Image (cartoon, rainbow, N blue to C red; front, top):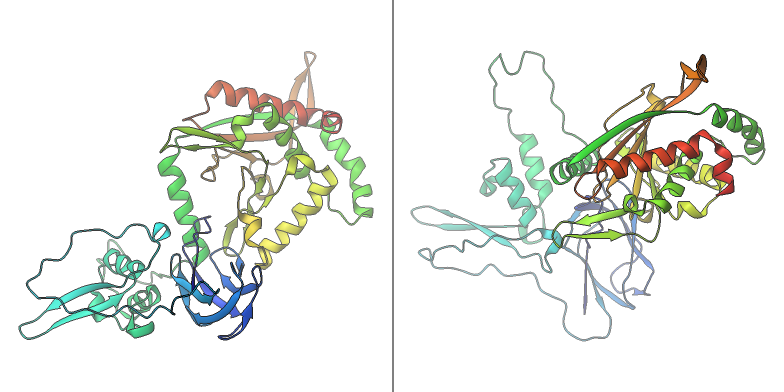
Length: 412
């Protein structure tokens, strides 16, 4: 029997909701068949079957929430064995001391083991079956898990049970100095939770440093204006972003440290072969960062086309899991919100992100004369553990050179 677990798919995703099973118990599945569609914080992921076989058991029903490390399905792949039974609650002597061991991160666990909380009274000893994630959430929210009704198999308490229990509780009155009359509270979305975790993780691990500068882009503005109609004839919306992506990919080839990540546990720098440029897309649920794979191998028109496709998919929640995985460098566009500079947060485990401000006309000095020029603000944040300010400065200079002369983008 093959115990197929919901794997750690990265990107800060720790749980998902079963949207649709494409097979039922007893059906024959082939390796690679889309077994189930799971809604995660950022995408609706199509999960393929890892083996050929017969579907013997479903780990969760449609509408249920499943956590990383929990069983999605049991598949009879011909390897033998029986369908695993649910773990039994074994009686323990009341006087036996509980283990002080701590269950590790669920992403690293091979098995999800039912945990028990003991409530001692004078006459009875009750044990509550709960997932490790539910137990941790109950501790964090200061909720007595014994008071929570479990909706999982064998009345197991799930994370959603803890959340529903919290919502059902009457809010604790707060002093007027802390919460005024008429204040409103609302829970954040799952996407926002993922953003909270990602941003906190990035700022906690990476020592950020930021360089800002402006580049004169008169030639780029003129060149884009000339090519805009040609692109429109091909059904392509040509913005400045494809040119910026091309400038960054060319600069990365000269400074590959910006297409790397740092393993602080082994003190190793990992240089990535592929240049996958992430683009921060504003959606109603929050920022989502899909990425263009092998961006260095694509033309400006192709980049523009893929940008439009990814942005639409992000807003419509039709991105595939692969679209948000394995990014190596990120671009965030301040300019679309009429902003010039910022201090962008690096998309961990990447080591760099560049913020693009709005292009604005400003007075500049050219050959000792004051003229009006088009200036593009740039904000480069970098991981100061492995990138020094001098290297960041050289990288930014190269990006500026490419953007100031768009013909270099076509000739390189």
